[in-house]
Length: 260
Image 1 (tube, helix red, strand yellow):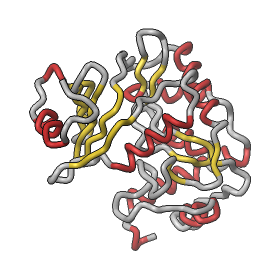
Image 2 (tube, rainbow, N blue to C red; image 1 turned 30 degrees about the vertical axis):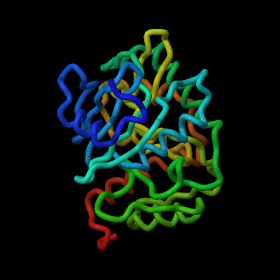
Image 3 (cartoon, rainbow, N blue to C red; image 1 turned 60 degrees about the vertical axis):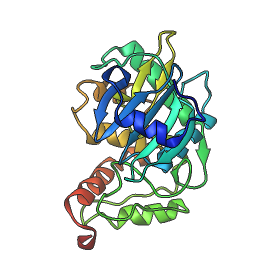
Image 4 (cartoon, one colour; image 1 turned 45 degrees about the horizontal axis):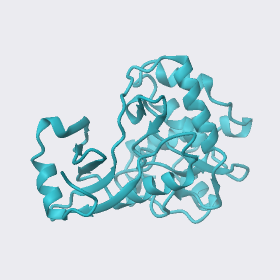
């Protein structure tokens, strides 16, 4: 029907008026997935950004495809109303939710262990630039860091007396997805695992991969607890920062930037 080189205007028209049988997966915060050909899908919406497209493509380049599949990104464009469009590889498969099979969770852990071998000297998104995701406040310009020290200062400035402190001095910066949840895992017919939604991913202390599992509690049912219990334990100096990092998130959600 369409190809990688199809005109932006034709793709926008089709996405906005796509028949129900072309919609893939679920709607999420104004984002939709539209299958435009046998091998291509477009993710679009007001909160779909060029930075997300760059992040996903960088992840595609960095990870071992024999360990985990990541859909290849082909193009990004936007329309006159500010909606972003990511054209990417379509991956056939199913989502298992609730996900409470220990064998499958153990396979996810092996993927996370692989991620921890991919490192950087600079924190932040895989494609560089401003950080994105739940950990960073919506009410202010998302931060851009050039060093672990800059990131450490940012976090400690968001902690009140008695809430501890954070230190990243001894932490390696490893590839973190930061949104490991059943809805973001596609189980392919051949048994391969595909991870999607790379908007929040970046190079951070491994502690950050634990944070959403701690912080979101039971929102993913038993999945979070099973994954936490299966992941390789953090070093003591990282696990001791569980309370401060959760407080940083709470404080950035509750208080305006001027209050911190």
